[in-house]
Length: 195
Ligand SMILES: Cc1cc2nc3c(=O)[nH]c(=O)nc-3n(C[C@H](O)[C@H](O)[C@H](O)COP(=O)(O)OP(=O)(O)OC[C@H]3O[C@@H](n4cnc5c(N)ncnc54)[C@H](O)[C@@H]3O)c2cc1C
Image 1 (cartoon, rainbow, N blue to C red):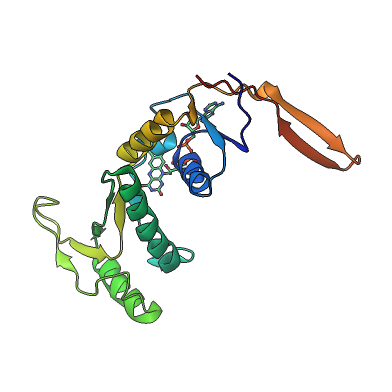
Image 2: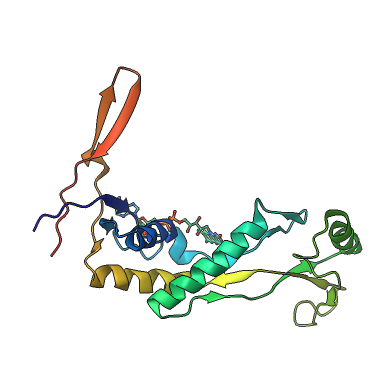
């Protein structure tokens, strides 16, 4: 059976999955084509959501906005798929020297990072290093996405609703069209077969 769809998404990583979910919510028709690799970036990722660059203790771009969005979005998706994969967990930075310790405290005060860094450092337990004088700095508002559970549960949803084509796209099927000598447009001519 041939079927016309508004959108063809190549790849069911985190990007393709979220795009597909958004299109589904907007009642658009779409198909996700994915070859089903078990070693894709999303599949093997640590899944850490961390607003702080741990080398210089600087905030990432639009950190608070993205954290708030992530919270809302992944909770909504958990409800939609009826499974848990988003965990709000603390992240601890290992502080290995007195200089780093002072730098941590200096950054909180200088850059008003109280919403993202715990001022008080914790003495690292001996299980981390028995002899060294290490500390742990707590980064706030961090989370962990269990990417395998996320991908697999969303894949089941796609499969059960005829939105998934388990195939590898052959990039040579992409046709280039030249318009007006200068601009270049690219269009796909892919026959989508759904069982
Ligand atoms: C080891 C590791 C750890 C990481 N840890 C983190 C982390 O802690 N936090 C963080 O934010 N980021 C992390 N990242 C980065 C993050 O995983 C990636 O930025 C993100 O997963 C990219 O997602 P994606 O959807 O763009 O691509 P992918 O996850 O690579 O998805 C692409 C999909 O497309 C499919 N595909 C490709 N070509 C074709 C084709 N021709 N036909 C059909 N299907 C095709 C692939 O099979 C795959 O399923 C990590 C990455 C790695 C490798």
